[in-house]
Image (cartoon, rainbow, N blue to C red; front, side, top):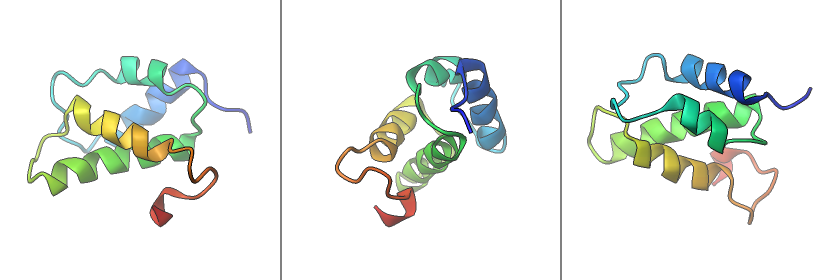
Length: 87
């Protein structure tokens, strides 16, 4: 299956963040631009991890920095191909 294009990535991110309390500063279109090469499953992991960073910080709102940290975690090169659950 081909990787999603920028519009597809944005839609996938919207689906996986629809129940999240996102800060107004979170721009999913911009995030979609920055996530070229990620699969739908990786984008789902990205959204989940961003939410977890907010929870770990005792916040109810997910901010842009959470997505950046999650992107770093999801795209780590030291463990390519390893599911996010194993980090």
